[in-house]
Image (cartoon, each protein chain N blue to C red):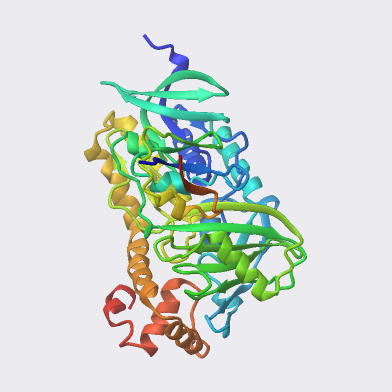
Length: 394
Length: 62
């Protein structure tokens, strides 16, 4: 017999925003929850540009000043030949609004999960899962000591390097055209307009991706790049270093360097028998923007709710848990699919065409800054170029 | 015939896990925050070398 102490309804692997939302939601719904994080600190090292939409974040949590590093009024987009368009405050939408201090935010969110009753363990890695008849035996290693816990269901919020999905029969391996290879410097003493997020486009400087600068308060900012490895000729870091040198950015004040892979190709099924995947593990990041925080949190919340429903029904079958897929698809899955179609198109687009498009955005009347309304405006001006996407966006 | 292996430069690696996510053989693993390459599983396909943002991986002849 198992010791009741090591029997849980749900084990959540990974304590990023997705995992914590799942743990918090499941605990609030009365489940016995354990959340494990392999790193010794929740929220560090962060692998993220930290931008989120104000509206979306506020719909998920009470916004706290403690973890908002900066607020932005809009975005400046630079075409391959450096034509700039400024999307202003009234147009600010998705991915632009708040710049988080993820180190504080992730920790705060994990504490919310703990407050709701979830147990939290750091420096604890899931090293394997054994499927038993009535439960899962989850093998954990905490500071070198191996032990087992039992759960009815596992929520894999274990990031781009997810193992949980693979153990449970979901192939999460990414191809080189399904991932953005990213590196980012936190630079201080920057000389940019810190009321805006800055985006630089162009296959020459960032093949299959873009370069960004997100302000983090005072004169600091996250200066980063994402490149698609299938198109890149050198590592992401080399492209970023080249760009910073050409831009004349003073890099004598780099206070942090982070790297990461962002999945940019949605998957069909993020559920299996006794298993739900959330966040990067479920490839819930946006294929165009690479933004993943909001979708991870939404997915986490849905996963927590579905887990609670499964426990109530005592039904952990793949068939019942597929309700999770239906729900995330209804919520943000359609946008992921749509933006994937757009991404495929942009990847084939020449820098000259991109220049043209940025130029023609200058006199577009945009309702907001979301990918959707930018593309809507572009389709109206360039129906030929976007003919095949019109049904997805208009 | 010379054999090859993937080598990680620990001074460059930022432990981001990008290499883990593309490995078909699950040879790369982030153990806590330490990248481990399991030579038994690795077939030196080089995908992880291409995805590494930090240029921390290379294939070496041994």
